[in-house]
Image (tube, rainbow, N blue to C red; front, side, top):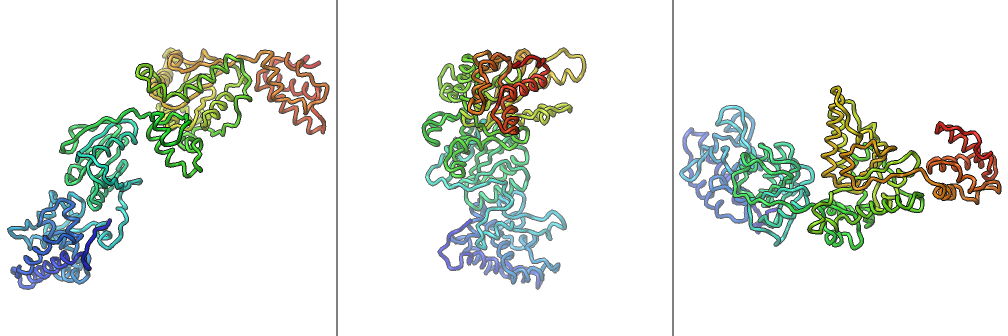
Length: 593
């Protein structure tokens, strides 16, 4: 907050007027009459003709008429000077050297409205530069200049401490629009801001986000006035009555309002609003390439793209790491974060399953390009939702990890114990947090054994059944607008509600591996270099096991071999197989006889 001046004493004019006004008040108090107003009139003329005095500049920025400029100069002058305060203390006789409403009435004239200059309709009050006490007799109520104003005049340019977190002043240079009152609605905050700044007048703009309290709104108006900037208010929801009332007072400012929803016309401040709807939130491939370079495949919204770009210097320009940072911390509170490490070579599945997995990966990778197509693009869902079905150990979780690694995403395995609640409405609330956090990009979300919440709706026999069905109905609506990547794993595809199946981008079934797949799995997990000559991969292939069980047997055999100080033998594998069979509840007799 700086006010340029060519004068050695930039506040000379306002200080001289304050001196004259305080002397007049002292003279009135001394003889109970009316003091000589000649000096006051002379300094009044000098004050109003001053172009460099910052006190005058602030008042003019607030749209103050001449008499309010004079009142402001008096109040500021008294608060800045101990000597003037002592005079006022002597007049008030209560030990407080602050201008009172009744004192302002004493300098009233044909050109000055007296107490009305600090009334509710005063520009000084509407711009939140001064405030009037609400207790005590009317004439004795104190008129206080806000501390931010006084600190600014003292040379401290720090923004108002009551501004909402994240507020910032933007200098746009010559990039300005023509409208003084702009309302923009839309889903993506970056799209809204870009459109708003394109049409809003003013070279400097103060941007504030989600003022939550009255002091936030007041500070926004005050700071924009002091900075001589347009005020842009970005709201996650809509404009409430309290905020609307503050903006209605600030008719001296150029104002832009950005909301996710429209504003009730009943509370919209009385201004000549121009309204715009923000475009599609999804960043186009050209926009992504312009910011992050060619070859970036992550489907991002415009706001996500802005945040990734801001994060790039923190992660050594690594696009993948920057995208991963988009995953909200709330997501990690509801699940376990996994750094994907395994790739396609680690996944042993049939050719048909592998093809479906590659197609699912491509669907996420090329979503932005397909959405740009004029006909088909209108029917492309904003996110990817898939079900992986099959017996335990067939590679469902591994496949999710492989896809996450291929796309450069984090994988978050949701802990259903933290999501599902016995309390009505809590499950939906937790799921909403999962979907909201996953929508920001940067993470693939896995609901392991997810049929617990995505299962079939049942006949209603009691209140619990009714609310369970409501949970499923909520999820059906939520997945329609979901923008992230979610995989639900289940042991049986028939457990998933049919309405979900219609909304899926893929239903991938993982069968128990056949002999060829089992051979590849044994060779992947049990290299012959750590086995003795008694081990026969072809013999192991004849034993019906899923991939997860084969891995367990190989790991157990490796530990036993190290303990014995020998290579893995046929006898060691027999022990490992028998233990795995017992875990699965199957008969272990006759394995590798």
